Image 1 (cartoon, rainbow, N blue to C red):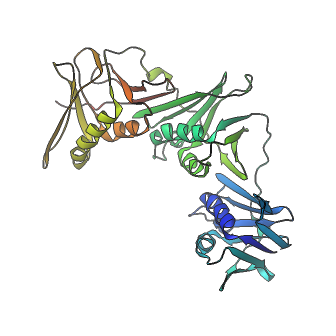
Image 2 (cartoon, one colour):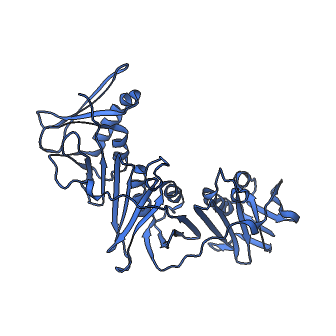
Image 3 (tube, rainbow, N blue to C red):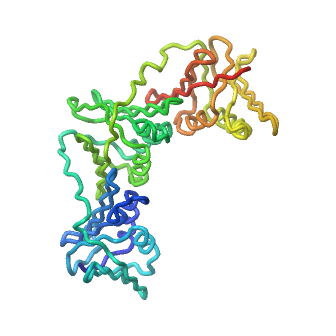
Length: 380
C-alpha cells in the first residue's frame, strides 16, 4: 500500500472514526483504525463492536486532488498514536507506505515516522443492513432532538436499557424518550416519511448519540437513517455510523405524565434559569441540590436554597401567569437546570399537582418537547 493524501482531509476522517475506538478493549485489533486504499479512494474504519464508524475519502473533492494512489492495500494502525500523529504533522501532504509485516512509514515534510501496523484481515467486518426501513431528517433537527433528551438517560449500568434513548416512529411522527426514573425527557417532530413506515422499541445508547451529534455536519444536510433488526445506520455524507441497539424492553412512561394540574405557571425561561443557577450554588454544597419553590400572596413565586455552613439564597420572580392552588415544593436544582438549558422557548409553562407529584415543563412556543422531574420529599 502506498499513497499521498492531503493532511486536512485525512485528519477530519481520523477524528471522526476515532470516536468508535474502544479505549478499554481487550481485543488488540479494535484499538486500531483500519485503512483501506483502492483506486476509488481511501476508507477509514473503527469499531468497538457497539458502534462502528466509516469515513470515505474520494480521490478528488471540490475539483482538487485529495488522494494519489500508487499501490492499493490495507493496514490497521494503532489509533492512540495515529490520531495524534496526523493532527501534528507539519506539511499539508502526507505519504503513507506499508511494507513487510505491516510496518508503516508516514512521511510529511521533513518528518518521518514509523508505526507497527496490524493485519487488516483480523478487523471485524461491518454489518450489511437490509434497507427496508429508511427515513431522512435534517442534521440540525436530529442534533437538537438528541440534546433535548440525552441528558436524562441514566449512568447506572445496573439498568442498561435506561442508559439509552427510546426511538419510535408512528404516522410520520418521530419521538425520542429518555428517563433515569427521577426525570423524563421527550421530544417529537414530524418527518417526511412513507406513512406505512413505523417502528417502536428502538433504544440507542446515550453515549453513542452524544458521539453521533459531534459528527453531524453543521450545514443543514439531510441524515439518512436505516433501522434494521438490531442495528441503526446513520448516513452523513461520506460517513457511515453504525450503532447496535440496546437489548430489553423500555418501560412505559406515558402513564406518569398527568393531564391536569392543580397549580400552573408561565414565566420567562431565562429569568428562571438564572435564579435556579444562583440557588444551585449553595444547594450543591449540601450534596443534595435541594431548592424550594413557593407561590407568594402577590401572585408571583419565591425560590430559595440554604446551606447550614454558608447561608441562604432567596429569589423573588415575577411570573407571566399563575393559576390554581398555593404551592410549596422541593426539587433537585441540578435536574431543573438540565431542563432549562435545553428549553428552546422564551416562555416556559410549568404544571404542578402538589408537593409530591411530578413537575411538568413545556415550552410555550411549540408542543414538540416535554420534560418531567420528580420532587423531593422534605421534612419541612
